[in-house]
Length: 342
Ligand code: SAM
Ligand code: SF4
Image 1 (spheres, rainbow, N blue to C red):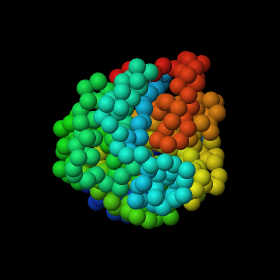
Image 2 (cartoon, protein in one colour; image 1 turned 30 degrees about the horizontal axis):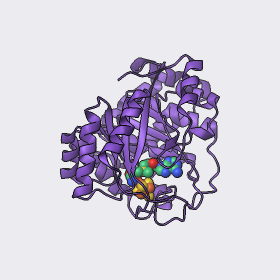
Image 3 (cartoon, rainbow, N blue to C red; image 1 turned 90 degrees about the horizontal axis):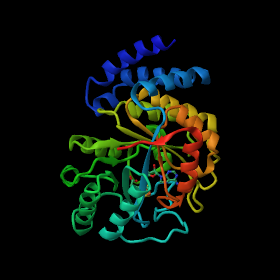
Image 4 (tube, helix red, strand yellow; image 1 turned 135 degrees about the horizontal axis):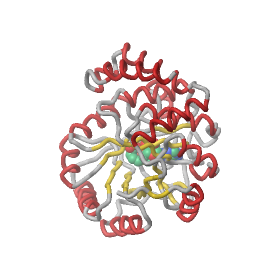
């Protein structure tokens, strides 16, 4: 069976690599073939899916190693975007207290603590719609320089970017830029109305063209269908190059947002999405990101078996709770797994 998939993959790869992300994205033939293949992978019996994901994972990664990352929110709340899941949007009445851009020293101190606790990647998130030139961006550039000097991978997620800003981030030592597609092209406007999928794709292209590695993933549990999830994976595989880092979030329902009552993701569906992502993106880091406090240890273990090889540690993730570091350490220990060295 997997030979069939290999052949299909080879054929798809030729189509998908034949042009820019945009040409590929809007080529119906490429999308159809790709979605067809992704559906075949996703809907296999779970034992076959997990076996294929494990085989792929072991060809490219140490199956025992999990990269630990830390995400610091360097500017909190008051964001003009209306992302339906987000605690930081001005459009929702949440309990979050906005906070201005942090000082450089505070962020560097957080990065040092993260490194001491075993993280090899430090991500800085700002509740901005887009980057604006000026003092705030200059401060972020300095944060990037100082965190990079600590010998950590440095990632930023600051909203939309222009080419000259991407170039400045690259020169400051940025490893990766996070910009999530979040869901399928057709479901996107049901969750966010203040920007388009195309806006997202353009920033991703800007990041790639500046020579920065792309971190791009999505959120499960926003009311999307299985088909939306497969379409989202197809959109990711249409990017050229494909993302080096793929965060898979489970929605953390935030009181006061339109998605506050969204039902939880079926755990087996989550495992299927992780395994399918691993098979489609053999070399990428697949990060089990938001929503781990709602997951059992067993479910997280199954996600690692399915090919997830990174988690975010620390008791807060952006503005929401995350498992305690000691719990994660104990879990990896029980599983005979280890933090991935840089
Ligand atoms: N403003 C920037 C942007 O949107 O690109 C960066 C910050 S944003 C908070 C980073 C990512 O966190 C979002 O793209 C989304 O995928 C994820 N996220 C935010 N709130 C979440 C929630 N309640 N549950 C799960 N994931 C969430
Ligand atoms: Fe703003 Fe990012 Fe939250 Fe959307 S996800 S409201 S852009 S902080």
